[in-house]
Amino acid sequence: MENPGQRYAPLVENPPEPPLRHRDDDDLIEVELDSMVSEKLALVWQKRRILGKWIAWGVAVALILWLILPRRYESTVRLMPPEMSNSGSILGLLLGGATSGASSSAAGLAASIVGAKTAGDLYVDILSGPVVLDPIINKFDLRKEYHEKYYEFARKDLIDRTVIDTNRKSGVITISVTASSPWLAQSMAQAYADQLDSVVRQVSSSSAHRERVFLETRLKVVKAELDDASQKLATFASKNVALDIPEQAKASLTAAARGQAELIAAQSELEGLRQIFTDNNFRVKAIEARIGELRRNVDMQQTNSSPGSMMDWIRKLPQLGVEWSNYYRTATLDELVYEALIKQYELAKVQEAKETTPVVILDPPLQPERKSYPKGSIFLLVGLFLSTLGGMAYIIGSDAYQRVDPDHPAKMYIEETRARWIVRWRNNKLRMRAADRTVKRPEDNGSAS
Image 1 (cartoon, rainbow, N blue to C red):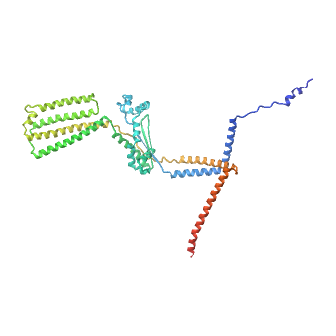
Image 2: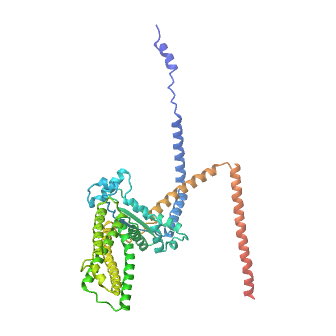
Image 3: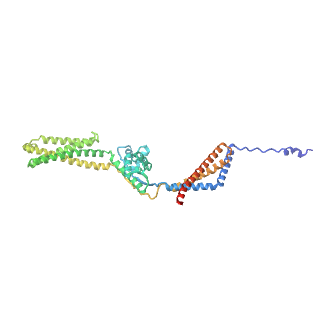
């Protein structure tokens, strides 16, 4: 009979070996890195006193820098967006009949959609140009403040200390200025707004502005002619006894002068309108029709020779009276033209004021109550972070250096160089002490004698 132990003996004597577990290379690298990090952290903890000294020195240096660095104060002014015109631009066509209260925000939204530039973008470009920066530099003597000799560098410094931003939706323009004192920051922010308003008014190119400029030039010419005619009339009346001209003759001359004055004023108005509008414009056509009517009336008055007419009165006057009437008519004509142009000029000024978009200050600049730079918390955190990194690097580097073989050529060279510098420093120190003793000995001898 077979023994059961013999049947299973080979299985018991030679048991199967368990399968080997092979680690991947990434797992091995991860284990090595974890062990290395743990070793370095343990080393840093072991030498935490050195790390504490580094941190203390780093925080102290950061605080010293925070105390030494000059203070900076920031003031902000916010400007209302200019009202967009509902005609003459793509944005105006997009807005249609929008009201003035909502036109500004709608224009900003439309401009952001179509990629066009708004008036706020134009203001930002103007604020960054010399036409605004140079008056501010001169007003506050910023070249001396920034220690710059040329305007070019002073502009760059001023731009670096100024932040200009515009909200694409609302169009509000924000100007933040940084300066060395609260008063200077507030004054410079206000100067930005004032200078921008001045520049916008100077470069206004509206039709009313062009009309006002033309009338202003024309007024100067007519005023000179009026002064000359008045002076000639006064000189003639003084040299020759003033004549008693009949009232009807005066009325006729005044009427003729008034007709010619109206004709000249209408021609001046037509000339001004032609510089702005085309010949097909309804205002131009209306003025041309009026000029034709006035010219016919003037021609009729000058050619009419019926009894009691102006020409009849002039023929009856003596030669002296004719000369007086010429002077009188010229002076009256120039005076009436001047009065007509004055009225047109005042109307053009009112219209220009309506079309000119002023710079409206939404939030005036306030005097800052606390400094904006340097921030003590930021300096403290940066000093703490850098000193901690520096201390850990010093501890790990010193440990790695100590583990290097003393017979390594690089380490031997470093040690020799360090020893040489130490010896040189000590010798210099000994020489300085000896020189001090040599200087003091003659003084002691002189005092003893």
